[in-house]
Amino acid sequence: MFQGTGSDVGKSLIVAGLCRFYARQGKRVRPFKPQNMSNNAAVTAEGGEIGRAQALQARACGLASSVHMNPVLLKPQSEIGAQVVVQGRVWGQAKARDYRALRPQLLPAVLDSFARLSEEADLVLVEGAGSPAEVNLRDGDIANMGFAEAADVPVLLVGDIDRGGVIASIVGTMALLPKAEAARIKGYLINKFRGDPLLFEDGLVTIDRATGLKSVGVVPWFSQAHLLPAEDAVALNGYRAKSEGEIKIAVPRLPRISNFDDLDPLRAEPDVRLELIEPGHPLPADVDLVLLPGSKSTIGDLQALRDAGWDIDIKAHVRRGGRVLGLCGGYQMLGVRLDDPDGTEGPAGAIDGLGMLQVETRLGGDKALVEVAGQDRASGQSVRGYEMHIGQTRGADCARPMLDLQGRPDGAISADGRIMGTYVHGIFASDGFRHAFLNSLRARAASGVAYESLVDQVLDELADHLARHLDTERILDLASRTAR
Image (tube, rainbow, N blue to C red; front, top):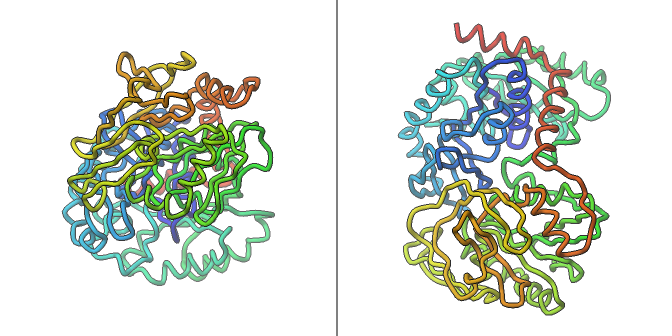
């Protein structure tokens, strides 16, 4: 199990890279994360949902993703509450304080999923969440040491040197843990190192002396990491758009933005400048497209969009002849009305939409979780993706659907063709469609970017990178010896 000295230290990519490395050696490798908190989710082959990071790790193993790779997923809907997904299905909603009492009830499901994966694997690589040193959260923990003790797995500690204070973070973590839990940590690694690793040799000596641990390696900064789907919205902090790109796309950063890996294929295009606009900043006037992303709390995020003044910016953009695309929650916002009578995503109620598509959405009912394939009606290009939403959208503009999903229409387009929406996530990963869509914004030559191949190429490069800098034999030996 890889536990971190904090969030965003690189655990997800360490596990993904090692999944690819050991899978290339012919081992049956499975990724596992007991509990994840993220609105960046993926649909599994069984029609459930898990964190996007575990879907990427499954891909690194050469496998279809499974609900058992991430049995508990928390999807924040407010500052204090989240939707709780257990083994791929919505279990309910819980406030943070209530969830702490609920966690022990979820441990059997977590251990059941871990046992299922273990039965079919030579090696399970487990990712922790946050840090085991958050001792105030230890009671009932299922994400870090609570799971490690229940499943009896050894732990490697991951420290992030790029943020500074890595010596103190590792030594402090060990100092805060009870002796039995500290003894479960068998080593550590330093991640995101910039410069000459030889300059940190004295630091390793200091950590070793203070903790009694030995390093399994110092991993230099991996510059291609941004080309892989991120685990959660923390990755969006400090996002910087490319300084160049003829096609300009603006994306309002909504408080509960979800499935934002929809943006990754667009960011990979060399002639696309994708700007993530933070609250307090207007949407640029010179963009070709405003893209409204998915949301875990559509009504709340629509209100936040209005509070930021972005509704005025979007309407001005359209008056100038600009285009708007809404994905899932963004599609719902573009309609005339959103109704949440049962409080599915927050307090029950209704709100006027942006009124840019003649459709209305009623939230409620079963959650749609399905992989889909079809065609873009405008270009005829094939698309693949997945649906992950609650509610139904109906109205006059649905008579002009954006996609044909093997005979089932999806989405809507305005009468003038400049406003469109779809429930399908992941469509921009389809190279032909992505080029045709961008070409409709500005005439361009196809870039040649093959996005899915690019992701696999980067996973291979990440595996090679880790193999050069980590003691992969020792990591495997630690797991093997513990298993015996």
